[in-house]
Length: 627
Ligand code: COA
Ligand code: AMP
Image (cartoon, rainbow, N blue to C red; front, side, top):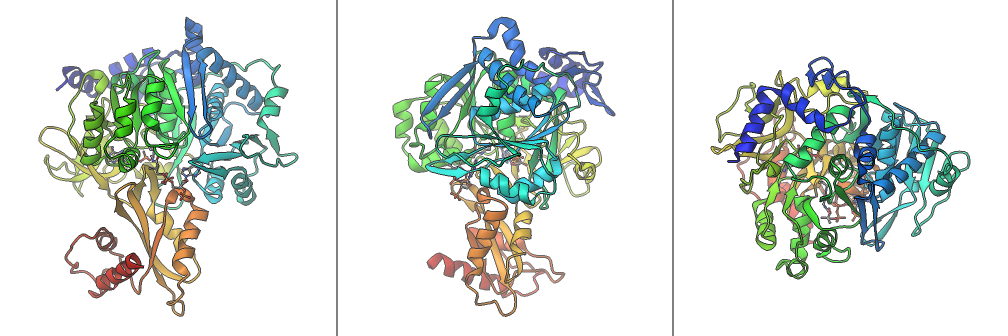
């Protein structure tokens, strides 16, 4: 074991006050916090800071204005560009001036619905500069989901682009924004649209502004100063799937976020000033917030913003090419991406040809990393491939091998060890710790580390629910166990959340949509194993009386989920079945459905109401597979 890791973790648990006060020294404060933590006031009470200043301005002030801050590599457009910290300050400043010209000030919300272009990062940092609160919505969500977020966050301004590029397809973004704003109850003051050459869009009079024109119109305005905000003022709201159709607005506070992220860059990822870090995620997800935008910049490193896919843009060598081209030292992606590369390039011919340059480690997260995928990547890269675990709620990893602290231990199938700042417990249904080796609910003792959420936007009860099942503990919603060497193994969720290609989705939410489709009497959506995406959703639908032979139902179910939730739901299979398997008390036996589609054998549960139902479902699944 790494002694540095052991001592660091122990210190963070025994004396969090000293531990996090020391970590806070890496951040520039406008007003120093009076202490690290107070149970009532949270992290770094009394402190004020500006996250944009810490991520951009201070590096320029320290004489590192010529160091590269951001690299945009876009195989889908052919563009490769970089910005020094000095240039980044100018770009962020210009967007801040644009926003200020539209009246955006401290505390206002700004929704950002944009593709993987550098302007998205500029916009996030510009909001932070003004003390405004951004809420980035992932481009794969449909208009209805965007509308829900607009109604909850009530933004003054929406920032968008004319289009995104998904592999070889161009996806128009603006019509989705128009639809969302038409159905949202909240009215925004304006929409600022980045026109991309590949597809431009019409602007609405009196509401929409052209990004470039507004930038030009405000070009003479001074770059707005960084507005100091309190440690617990929100930096952003990031909506994530909960167990119902209503997304949870995770609120990230400025102080704890800056301190914690800067700490992880060094201790987990071994990245410091001038070194290149690449998280191949999307800015719409928490990984993108923390490790494409804020984390690397907070420590003065170089970050890569990649607009492409692991395969098809143009080939399965694109990740390795990007790593070599930019001297990436630490790389972060989802297991699905590695599986996609492996599927197209099983012998790793591209990898052998291109190499991995200066790369020292690959980190994986977002879903369970299967041992085979890790094995393939380690064999062919010859590098450590490190699974680590976290959640939107936490904002940074909570289980990992702290590579930067010299911890090289890994075990395939495990996400590693508790990260300093987190004390884990595996609890049974009564809330008692279970012995090592035994599975239970994965929980963490309060207080959580500084980056973790301390409330949900407009939803305090929703936040408190996470701490209600096991008093004194945060319930992660995951099940897992510690093994006898202290490795923590995450085995899956205890609720209806599934991870599809590393994207977090709620099957409960999909069920709510399916239930409204004409002709559907009842339904269940489950997560089935998938060799590429880890999991995929599958719908089982019972038709209402009279519609049993309506063969259009499955297609309409699929279309409804796509149009209401978004393409990212990846629901491609729906079975029309005569009945759902239920207990005598009427509870749907989703596990039975899961086992049937996974082809697993199982004993029909004794509680089942009708023992003939599983066979009927097997038939329906088989019939569809054969057609
Ligand atoms: N904007 C618009 N649409 C989007 C989108 C975006 N930002 N992201 C995804 N979509 C669409 C896709 O085009 C696809 O649409 P389709 O059904 O019409 O083909 C759908 O949403 C599902 O996307 P995805 O699940 O990503 O599948 P894919 O087939 O497009 O790509 C992979 C497969 C493996 C290449 C891709 O899932 C991948 O890169 N995964 C890594 C995930 C990751 O980095 N997650 C972040 C967590 S760390
Ligand atoms: P998200 O909030 O999108 O980051 O999703 C968080 C959920 O993804 C967790 O609760 C887990 O269920 C799952 N997850 C993330 N990382 C891992 C991992 N390394 N191993 C297993 N599951 C993971």
